[in-house]
Structures are given as structure tokens and as C-alpha cells.
Image 1 (cartoon, rainbow, N blue to C red):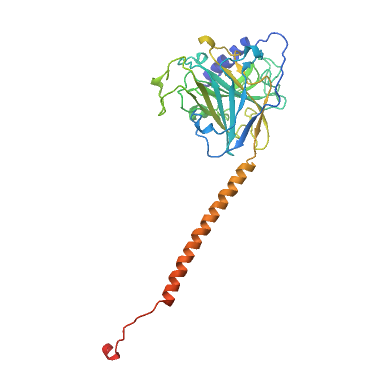
Image 2 (spheres, rainbow, N blue to C red):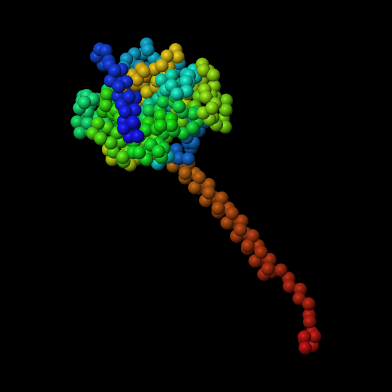
Length: 361
């Protein structure tokens, strides 16, 4: 089984990228450095189901989507921009991606369905361009040779994923010690460059059974009319070409058990660096590995709040003050009633009937 996973990983993430990630001309990038993604502390708010209802009051950052290998404004994704939202609850990070697009779904055909990926810097030298930027090739890239160039990638291809259902880390794949997802292809990957990327736990130097997929996620489209839940037999869930918006929702713990330098570790109050990619079957044609759009041509800062925002603090203080005031009023009312009862017993007249002594003999 493990050998099959290695072969599958190479077929999906190796052969395709070696052929497709070929750039023509010199790379140039004009990054809009002021754009960032904010992740505020908002506990108890998100239900991970692919729906955007619980995100409506969360501010997002809007990005134009341009081809990754040729970030020219003339070639932007023409259906609209991508909105990226993020927050945390002190334990987990949450992400919501919103992208306008006509509905396209072909069961079992990942490259005929939309797909998304999140990428994060791990190593200090890891660049956005060239997916980490390690100069080693497929025959020489190792964790030692490419140390410091690691990036963390979550990739979700929805061809076998039922909308509204959770995918990602599961007991079977995690039990085998890798970042795969045989059910919905929401996989946990690390990379040093486009030619050297692997499922967590797998690699050119051998496999490590301590790895796992820490991501979970779901997807949805605004044209869906069923809210009670879909099953596989409902595919394709709505007719192709329906106008609307795709929603992709994900979560992952701030910190993971990774000891292989394959997961980004989020820290409250410290920024991270991220990017987002989007694949779409334009004109109903299958997409290919490098034919994706991205939200920028360099890392986008992810600002993770420490959880001590003034708004939350004020709300907490107000809530505590309100609770104290109510308790004081209740205690005062109880004291008043008790005092009245005691006063009544002390000062009310006692009319006791006279009984002669001889009646008791």
C-alpha cells in the first residue's frame, strides 16, 4: 500500500509538474506590498461546513486572480476576484475562500472541477516564486540539500468530494503516516520547488510514519438549493453553468506535531507568509498543473492577532459588568424580601388564647 501511495504521489505531484512548470522569459513581479490577510481572534464562531453564513461579519481581503507563471493583468480570471478571510479561536486557524464562477463539476475528474491550494512559508529562505526556490533537481533534492527552502501546501481537488462534507485528515491515511486523503483529495504537502513536492511523511530520503494530514475542509456553491446535506448519488448536485460563487472553507491547528519541517507553525501575534492558488476548467477544458491563478506574485502577509484586541476586551468587560450588575440586583431583592419577613415576624401582634392551668392537670 505504501509503495502505491509513493507511486501515486509521484504521478500526481511529480511527473506533471516537471513537464508543466516551464517558464518562458525572465521572471518579473510587481507585488502590492500593502495587501495582507487579517486573522482576528473570534472563538466559537465557525462551523466547518463550506457555507459562508458564519463569515458574513468577518472582513476579508480581495485579490485579483492572475496566472501564476505570467501575472499579467490582461490575463486575469475574468469572473471576479477572490476574497480571502481568516480567523483563529486560540487553537485552530480557519480560512474561507470566496470566488465567483459558473458551476462546473465532473465527478471523478479533478481537472474538470475547480481546485484550490494554500501555500505557506516554512523555511526562512523559502520564496513564493518557484515554490520554495531550492535549486536542486529531482535527483538531488533532499531535506539536507534544501534545508531552509521548505513550503507547506494544502491542496483540495473536489472531483470526488461531496459538497458540505468534511475531507482531509482521516484515521486511515493518518494511520499510515502520510498527508494523503483517499476520500476527497484534500492533501497535506510540503515542497522545496515545483519538481520536489511530496505528501507529508513521504520523500526522496525515505518515508516517516510520524506524519499526518492536519487539514480539514469543505466546499459549496451558492447555486445549491439543498441545505439538509448531499450524498454521492446526488452528483452533480446542480446543473452545470449555474451562476454563483464557490466557497472553500478550511481549518488546521495553530501548532502541529510535525518534527520533519513539513508543516508551517502559526504563532499568535506573529505574522506568517501565505499565498492562494485557484484552478478552473476554462471553457470546459481540463486545467493542467501550472495553469493556475494566484492572489499575488509574492508572499502575502498573514497577520495573526494575539487575541487581546480592544474590541474583544471591551466586549468582555461589558459582559462581565452586566453580569455583576444583574447579580447585585438579584441579591438586593432577596435581602429585601428576607428583611421584610423578619420584620413582620418580630412586630406582628401575637393573639394567644388564655388557657387555665387546671385544664392542663
